[in-house]
Amino acid sequence: MLRFSWSARSHVGLVRPDNEDSGFAGPYLLLVADGVGGAAAGEVASASTAYVAASLAMADPDRDPLELLGEAVARAHDLLRAGIRDDPDRDGMATTLTAIAGHDDRFGLVHVGDSRGYLLRDGELTRLTADHTLVQQLVDDGQITAEEARRHPYRSMVLRSLDGAHEPAPDLVRLDLREGDRLLLCSDGLSDLVDQEQIARLLATADLDAALGVLVEEALRAGGRDNVTCVGGDVVDAPRLRPDGSLVGAVSRLENQVDPAAVRLPSPA
Image 1 (cartoon, rainbow, N blue to C red):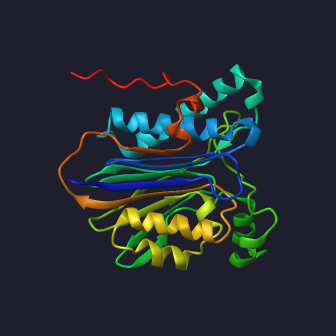
Image 2: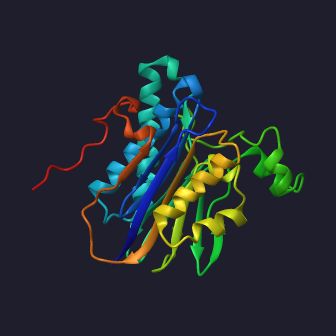
């Protein structure tokens, strides 16, 4: 069966005191969530969202990936709304979400915000996501160039996110993946500092974990002004694995969850 061989790296960066990024990587799900809100608990937003999606994927990996990812968005939205209701100091917290789920011939992507998804196939890097940001809208409208967008003072202004207050509007896309493909999901702590040509070159490093390591190091070398999270998956034809995975960043800390019992996994037989 086709599934992921995975790796994940997250670093707080060189400027920010805390890591508000969350990542998950496993045989049937890859995910990055970048929390925003600072003192308003961006780490809670990203960790809770990543936890919901990972729990749903582990509970039912054979489910249609777009149905699973759509439910993850809806349940994360409800969980964040409850978290704000229970603690008004969290008002303003939000997160991006970029995730790929599935196996065999069924894969799907969900995307909201400005984290990114890339596909490396036969040495060519393709971007799978479009930033939901003000500067991307300006680029699309022809008002600024892509290079100007990298230096724009409002480059971090996200127009879509999961915040528990507004109905989410994610992109949901089916993907046609094949053996040998390499996927990268990353927070803007990487993509803001390392251009696509560099990402393509470094991601081609034979060992996936080593590739993610050099990508994170390159972002730190470029200033590390934000948290940096890279989640990768090689599409392999290999035996089925028990649904499991690796947690990195804010989601690895239980205290960042709005409600650790929000998603219950089935009891083992």
